[in-house]
Image (cartoon, rainbow, N blue to C red):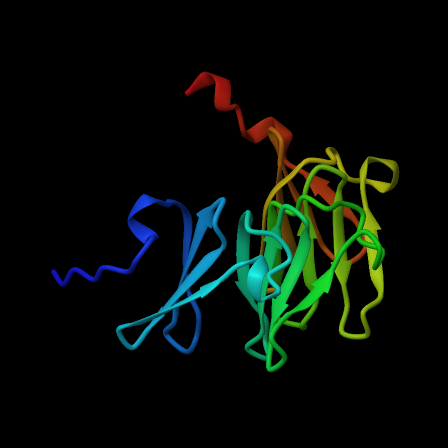
Length: 178
């Protein structure tokens, strides 16, 4: 076991770890931004170098290798440019993004407390909430399966989106009986 020390990291709360396809380890902390560990070197990203918010809840990599971050202020995208940001001013329905996920078609799925939304490759936004089929507006986690169905974990309900309809699996999950 090798131990590495980086100034200021020892006093942070680590909320998520993620390894991208370039073998970089991303360390999401609260409330102090993100660290990247690669080839025994640390990099540090905060609002001081254009991260949208220092509270980063979620991370995912798209098909092009861009890193997407769900933050307390919206979404930050790390690409060849330092950061691109997506906020409610851009049209996303929530500023507090707890879940972000890239599907195999290149769409970005994200959500927080105001429902789920999809950002397509042309930057068009589709919003899904209780008014158009979602069982809950509180999005906790998102992933996709081999058929590119989108699976959404909401507050007490599991939902699958299959391109044109939602299927809810609420009868199968009972957290209070564990």
